[in-house]
Length: 372
Image 1: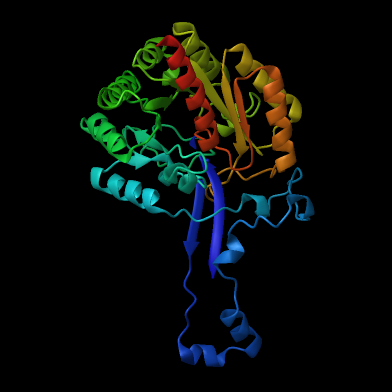
Image 2 (image 1 turned 60 degrees about the horizontal axis):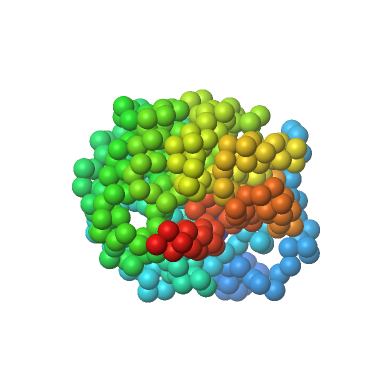
């Protein structure tokens, strides 16, 4: 049978689709009861697990929230089902990644928006999120499924050039560079980030670059290295509300430290767009979400995204609540009314979100045109 599972890592939020073959030997089939054989013959097909625009979320009667003390996992609601990625551009980018040994959050986290982003989508702005500094993190956040180690392999010195060359050849308009946490490196990997940005801009200055960075342990010099690299958007995810931060994130990640990183980036360059993201569905209250938005606004953050937390594996935090599309729409309206430059809020929205990047790229291009 087919199984679908959606879950999340900041970026780290996760999507997995896999097929379990159910072709049985004929002699085994004959021994099965007739009704069972009929189920095998007429079992669910691929279309049963893909998004259906005719299904209204208001009609869903399944349980959306676990009460205190309950341990069972919630069933995935219909609005979180998505389409399988296809298309020539998607296939081309995927194949190039293999050749150059490059990692993307899009694949590592099994993002449900990968087909739209790599393929160009309705706006025709093709985007991708490249994960620098390897695929092994020095931290162990309880929402994230990326593998961890105290001492990951050293960064690939050819990665900045390979990344820039690949991006230039793909014809991308907007690229997001992110990474695992590298607490084992003195600068947290900030120079590696900066070298990659400069190489991308050297090969094609028209490509817009967003850096979704770690907190660098709050090191202001590392933040300055990123800000001075020539990037267009500085992003760092707050991930969750303050009360849940010690429970959700690694003990070395602090809510106020993340706010300081975002504030510091803006102080170092007032014209730099800053961005952050919040996961919903971990047990936070409306009041806590509002306070987080207030804190991000005070820190000078320009753009925010809010999306549904997905449980990567049984070892990770369970989803406490599947937030409805109507509630996400509410937070979008709240964000816009507060004066954020852009608010992307929806069940499948991720920190690197296609529609948001299209909007941000439009702003940046207008600013550039005014300067020229």
